[in-house]
Length: 141
Image (cartoon, rainbow, N blue to C red):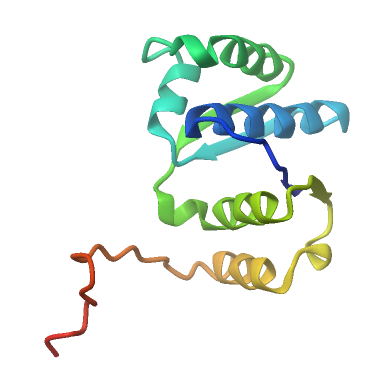
């Protein structure tokens, strides 16, 4: 399952919480009982796993997330941004289209998302390069 959704104007932490709630609700509604959720937001992972104090603006959402997680066997763990490239692409599509759409078959995904999924399935690495503004990594080659 994959989805994108337009969540309006909010903080990144609120958007992560709202997206997680949508995904967890779908998981429960469709009878699944085991789930591993990976997020590149270490703050969110720590708030859900009660390692870090929950921020006031997302406290209610975190409570709902924990409640939904308790209805099945659900783990929530951190991953680096490179491992979350498909979710980031879907979030961008939801923001651009200002709509919500759920996918239960890979064939229904857009061509660029399917390409990312195939690369992920093949265990291809994703790299993040940091450069100074206006400079490219291969300028001095």
